Image (cartoon, rainbow, N blue to C red; front, side, top):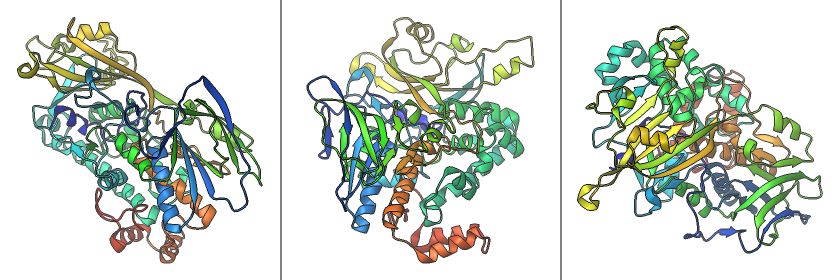
Amino acid sequence: MRAHQRLVVISALIFPAVSKAWSLADFQLPFLTSAAGPGSGSQVVFESVQAENAPLRIAIIGAGAGGSSAAYWISKAAERHERVVHVDVFEKSDYIGGRSTVVYPHDSKSLPSVELGASIFVEVNRNMMRAAKEFNLTLSTFESEADNVLGIWNGQQILIEVNNSGWWGWFDNVKMLWRYGYSSLRKTPKIVGSLIEAFKELYTPSVATWPDLEELGVELKYAHLSAQTAAEYMTSQGVGELFIHEFVEALTRVNYGQNSDEINALMGTVSMATDGAVGVLGGNFQVFEQFLNHSDAKVHLNTKVTGLSFNPPPKAKWTLSVEHEGPPADIPAYDHVIIAAPFASSGITILGSPKTETFLLTPPVEYVRLHVTLFTTIAPQPDPAYFNLPASARVPAFIATTHDGVRHNRKSSVIEVPEPEFNSLNYLYQVKNVKEHGIDEWAVKIFSKETITDEWLAKVFGEGKVTWVHRKEWDAYPKAKPTTEFPPLKAAEGLWYVNAFEPFISTMETETLSSRNIVDNIFEEEFAAGICPPDAELEAKRVACAQSEIECPALYEALASKDGWGGTGAEGRIYGWDC
């Protein structure tokens, strides 16, 4: 197991992210068509009148986790119900994967790839686990086979070092018990476990479809979590302040770039749900390639959608304006459009819908601007002096950070603790060794709020010791402030928004759940049948549950076990995959 495969036990449900580092220049899928071609860029409006009884047409904007999985769910549903559905996927970049993308040290594909963004998924992420199994993708685990120490840095000192032997394994560490106390270490797993148990219902018919995130939050009993900060909620559950502001905050900062007293408790708890962390060997983007490869969708790369216009019947509901290289493509108008990209940064203008203004303005979703710095260095560790350690000290290979030193500045005028200059710093794996290359060299990744300059790298790792650098800046994940309001899944008639789920929970997995729900809703509208055939007995029990005629938890348990629903990872029946 390479060292870089073990770093993300702490980075469990990390953001999806966007990059242009990976290219399809050397690899074309059989379903793929690219709008790129000779000539200058052009602005094109795709519009046509559909013939009576024409097949349903759906446009998907974005080929990341949400868009690719939406195409796959449509294909599954159409096959089950023997319906003809034409799907076009528009992607502004030249690659598939959205915010899941890899780069190679020294830009050499002979070296192991490194995820720039969406690094891992976990055992409870059953769609991702099932997809990897269905598509015969190799998973790599994140178990340590070497010294793997986590340090928590507050900008002035390393507060604690623990052996990173797995999330709950840390709780056996005497130093953790001594510093944070038994109560915090006992209660935190229960908080995480409760969230996971509710989350599992999303893979059974009991919570298969929902009209909006507010209702889903109530059904899963998550509403109180999204309405308060992680610090507030965990304090109310008896978790100690020191543990929250140091250890929990280290996780929320590395996973979502936000402090424990800023991020809501739902996303804060998700940050700690790290059991069974895995990734696809060679890059998680391969899952999304395969979603599209196993769908009937036509993919248009290098094609940026700039506008959507609503047209009343008898025309198809939506026409698209796009920018791309080459001549215009002959693409019809659409009955439905699925936006599967963060709308705020999409540059899309929507016209002709009475609900457009509400969609654009309520509620606004801000994103965290993240700087990712990936580099190689011949320094076996950072300079201990930067961390105020003796020259002979061993610096932890993985350093997470806390904002707590800055908080204490407000309480004391004696010592000023600076804000840490990064969210996390991680030695990933050894790129080269003396025996084969005559030199030892390591790959390192830093997440930060600001640009990590060459001067900073020279200061921390040594002048002339950094041998290659790749920087990426992007809107990585939503600012998950406490809220009970979320963007609409259905923005207007025939217009759907996958990324409405992001401020609720932001992961690759939840994008696939959001897209499944949207496809379910579209098929219910068009054909009175969702992804899976209707279950009359189930619907009757759901109504009884909603009317408090039976106990809902008991219903969910019965449904999960009925006909094999439930299970872990890729095993057992999963709604959407199995009907």
